[in-house]
Length: 158
Image 1 (cartoon, rainbow, N blue to C red):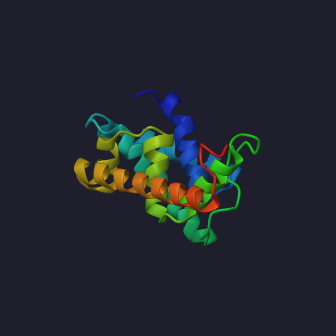
Image 2 (cartoon, one colour):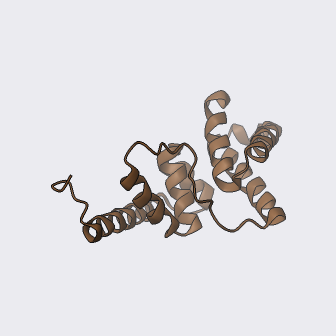
Image 3 (cartoon, one colour):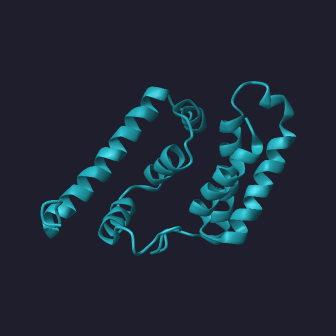
């Protein structure tokens, strides 16, 4: 595993959890420092899971300190000119997910973390992670589809 390749992904994960640029940078750096202290664990074949576990714990500690509860209105990296309706519907659908479901979507589809590493991170079987991921995607798809149907925004109308 190339640590440099994982740095941006860990930073994105921390930013998603904390919603503060400098704090996310600090936590990302601390994550890698702690990771490098675990020399013996890296040889056991799950370094990515350890990296995310450290980041997750540090973010949880920070959230407890700051008592952050809700997501901000704007998601990072949004381009208001591209698919405004779809992005609004997606944002609404994401807000209806639980925090764990949003985290699962981020890790699996934004950061590209493997199902095996997610299973290790959450302490569950790969099948359970696969099932939960599929359930969350269907939930998002259903919610977006229902909203499009209600608002009359369909591909034929556009």
